[in-house]
Length: 249
Image (cartoon, rainbow, N blue to C red; front, side, top):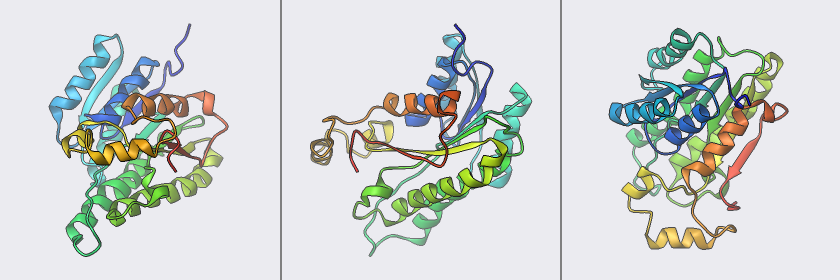
């Protein structure tokens, strides 16, 4: 039986670890050829590529900082050069820092908006030259834009922008047959959330208590939805915000 994404080519930004890495793996398992983008962790990206190719899939690792126009262009160019086409773009690159309004800095603001918002726009700008009828753009947002937690004004601001941009681009690119949706995770266990000490903390226990499905999220919970959004199964969906949070809203 043909795989769901057979013959499609996907770019996943920020795919060396966490949610991006699992999305890359699952897109490849569904038959896509995948460009695994990374900003700094070459080792992480190489491991994701090895995981994919070890199972008979197709993937290459490509360095690039999405917040720089030339790098964003280079990531997309690598897909065209390697695989000859582009069908799916997953704008997953993201950074986060939390601080109360009294103490956030300009540097924190620019870093988060540059990666999370400008990076998404630059990569999409480079991709739309190549995406055709049936193309799918998946913007990784966050449930924070809905639940607006304290001390997250900058980060939540970036994710609110992602939701708004998703709506605009769905209308702008719809006539070309390109779909644009936001996939907005809740709390997910990743290297990042483990690294900052959130996983296993009282804060995590509190978050799980407030989750109707009664557990924390795993990267696979998000990646399977990304596969659906990349595939023709979601061909009548665009401009949507998918809250993938176990019911938290």
